[in-house]
Structure formats: C-alpha cells, structure tokens
Image (cartoon, rainbow, N blue to C red; front, top):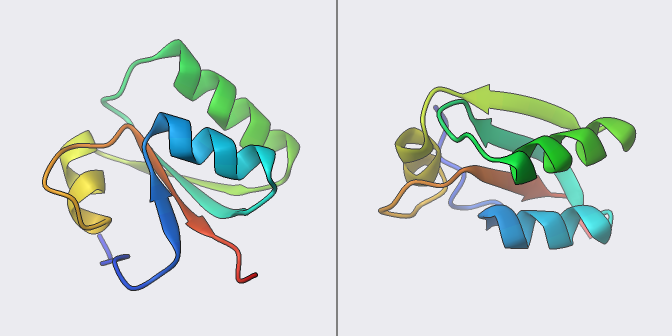
Length: 81
C-alpha cells in the first residue's frame, strides 16, 4: 500500500465523517477487518457523493499507510482546497 503521509488526510471514524459532511473527501479507505455499523453509514454517504472507495485488508495496514502506529477503521484523502 502507498504512503499517504505527505497528502492532506484524515483518519478514524469521527474525522472521516466530519470531512464527508463538509464535502472534503476525495478518496475513502475502509479496512475490511473493521466491523462497525458506523462504517456502513460512512460508506453509504461516500457512495451517494460519488467518492471512490478503496478497501484495505486490515486496520493495521491502513494505519501504517496513513502514518500512525495503531490501526484505523477508515481514513480519507482530502480534496485540494
């Protein structure tokens, strides 16, 4: 997986949800091993807005790609504002 640490980004359910509400998300990443109802709502909102959704094998891998030492259920690359 790519290294996204140099791009504008958000990580975690709360930050990703806020970015989606503000129409700031360019690409959404969701960890397959993260099982929460909230992720379903985030994914549904992203689909409604026509945002590209990419599934990642694990929360750990997603966290690492986004520059954190812990796993993340979801993360997003932000639009250039």
